[in-house]
Image 1 (spheres, rainbow, N blue to C red):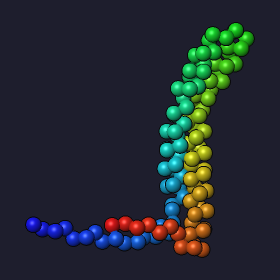
Image 2 (image 1 turned 180 degrees about the vertical axis):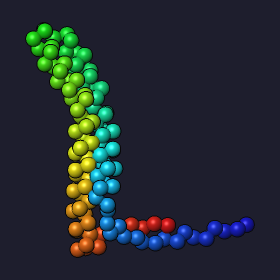
Image 3 (image 1 turned 45 degrees about the vertical axis):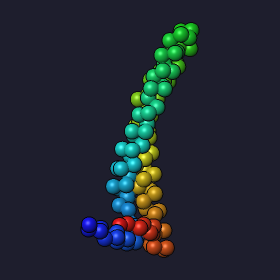
Image 4 (image 1 turned 90 degrees about the vertical axis):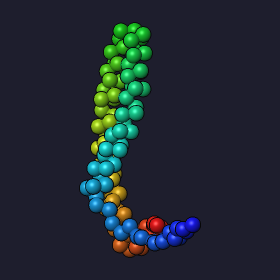
Length: 104
């Protein structure tokens, strides 16, 4: 019976993130998360059809507007915060050495 050798554990350090790449990655992830809110705003618009005509138009426009804009706003926030976060991380990592990760 052959024994498998023990795994070799090594420590690696994350020294830098590419700001634009992290911004793009978070823009896509946040945009997908923004899509999770779309059904709630559409349901809000559907319930607004039961309201009086004066109130119905504003609520329906608000719900539809947010259903369309929420994923775009989240994606934009993800890009800006991802790129800014990477820049701040890179600056701090220069001073203290970055995050240490154990891999095998």
